[in-house]
Amino acid sequence: MSSSPSRPTVVLGVTGSIAAYKALDLVSRLRRKDIAVIAVMTRSARELVGPASFESLSGNPVAVDLFPRSKPQQIEHIALADAADALAIVPATANIIGKAACGIADDLLSTVIMAATAPVVCAPAMNVNMWNSAAVQLNVKILAARGWTMVGPAEGRLACGTDGRGRLAPVEEIEAAILKALGWSDDLAGVPVLVTAGRTEEPVDPVRFLSNRSSGRMGYALARAAALRGAKVTLVTGPADVPAPAVGTTVRVRTAEQMLAAVTQHLPHHRALIMAAAVADYRPKNAAARKIKKSGTATALELAENPDILKYASVHKKAGTVLVGFALETDDLVANATKKMKAKGLDLVVANGASALGSDDNDAILIRKGGKPLRCGRQSKRDLARTVLDEVVKLVARPR
Ligand code: C5P
Image 1 (spheres, rainbow, N blue to C red):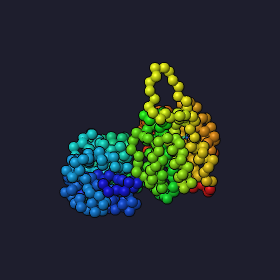
Image 2 (cartoon, protein in one colour):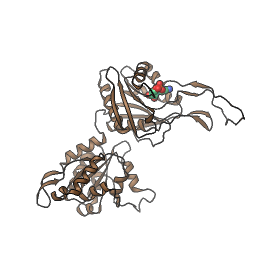
Image 3 (cartoon, rainbow, N blue to C red):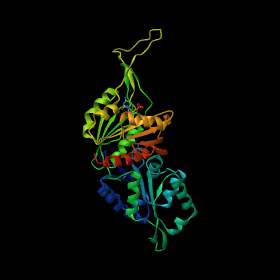
Image 4 (tube, rainbow, N blue to C red):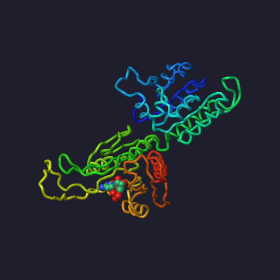
């Protein structure tokens, strides 16, 4: 797949409706926005439109095989599912809608659909009686309830010569739904944003360390969401459980002191700092040069306090630099997070309980300087990242 890493990627499933050729226009539109497109065509779609057209417009090979001989080392459907920032099925036949609703995975596209966690946009196109059939109507309801965005179909003259609902929705409507699903916009175009993520590891000796259960998911979702809005992202990351997203520049660190050094170096060139990393508050005062041996008696570890990176940033930042922090609190969430906002001189605090640790979801409250707390409710970290960035956009737009 030849997409440059920081560009968003749409995996486009094309199925065997006569409207398949209209998906070519969609590819051109997305490419004009520098969005990478990888087309997955079903067998019947390939009867209607040649893969070469999709290949030349997208600049990527069209995926058709579950087990491509040319890539024996990779599992094609998982690689495609993982590459997708959004999955679009344009046009979607009654068949693919039925397979997705029932959990059938018997070819590449249906298997990618099952393996993908990205948001799905589905644009059905079929004969009016097929669309109105009880089976399709039920399947569409099932998929909408799973969070799929259904676009169309529209009314009008159909390929079979009849009139009614079943035409592919206008391509610009489908494009708008895909951009929304991606979280794509240009409201942070060119704005340098520094994001920290992951946890820190504080060495006890050469083989042991003190750390915490942060997975890195929230910070990575923020870095990705900022990049999708056009920000020039620098990601400073400690160890994490999931792979770092490919954004502008990634700086890898291990300890809080290394993270402080990286933030200090990069902050002057950035308009905002989003400090999502779970920084250890303490480190072993003297890390042993050799592995500490069992002595047969109880022992104690002396701890030194780590630098508070956000506090440091709020004292040393250039005027107008936006500072966003996180507050993980087990009690009095709003009161404690508000205190933290004042103490650390922050513009915004994302307050959450411990249940967010290691999870794909978060139930956060945004504490806004001079504004009312915003209760986000339980939502995916991807969606929360977008809400946080909506606030960052407003803060960045303020006069300095
Ligand atoms: O004070 P507390 O550790 O709860 O504050 C959490 C916020 O402060 C997070 O945004 C975290 O990234 C940041 N932090 C920091 N330096 C530390 C500890 C936490 O910047 N040493």
